[in-house]
Image (cartoon, rainbow, N blue to C red; front, side):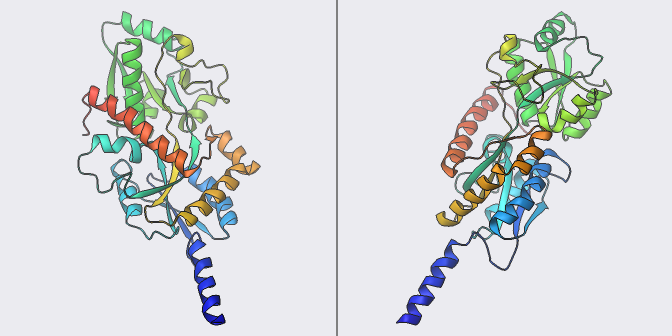
Length: 317
């Protein structure tokens, strides 16, 4: 009887383990190395590993707007050994864009925690005469031709933010989709297109280096790294708020106790002063949450972006 009780107790402890005790935790990233999501993942990995007492390995599975990585994690072992660091796109935007997703954001994932908030900033070439977004709008309305604004692709956060901006401001703009953020940022710096709406983390280095000029923040408040840049609402352009947050989800069947342990480890990681400093240095704002709060955020943003996509009849390429 004693042996049975001991064995049962060991089984109970094993069920609470956030992953295989003898293996690493794989943190799946849906984008190539060097981008904002990858940078956040690599900042998290070392400290998260310390909190879990396991190695955390960042693994990039890029392509199909995050759908490849999402589908992979949806079918991964539900034991905490595979986690998905997702941006808002894969879980709240893709369901409205694609009819045949290889995963279901609600059915296939267990939310663990939001990780960071990423405000969207409107940038132009430094030679652009506009002093802020409101001035940019006035100048665009005076132009005979529509002003070209690039995005990282149809249905991306930069594209959807531009659509909101155009509706709210009546700016005379033309959407020019690119395949990824890097080429459009280069073309803004080269004055091939007039502007771009992008995450602060992906643009802050270029802004601080004088290669891009910020005209407005698509967020409720100003950004701590850009305190002199007004929000769009402050400039009279209301209802344009875009947060490309990142969060961590696990396969849906992951036990609640494992999700809770992962959540506690992430909270401790994001409370670490060194981790926060690294995130804040490139513009990401640490924002841990409960699993329930992340689930509510996913649902709310899905409703918000679906309404815009349907209203504007946006279809993927």
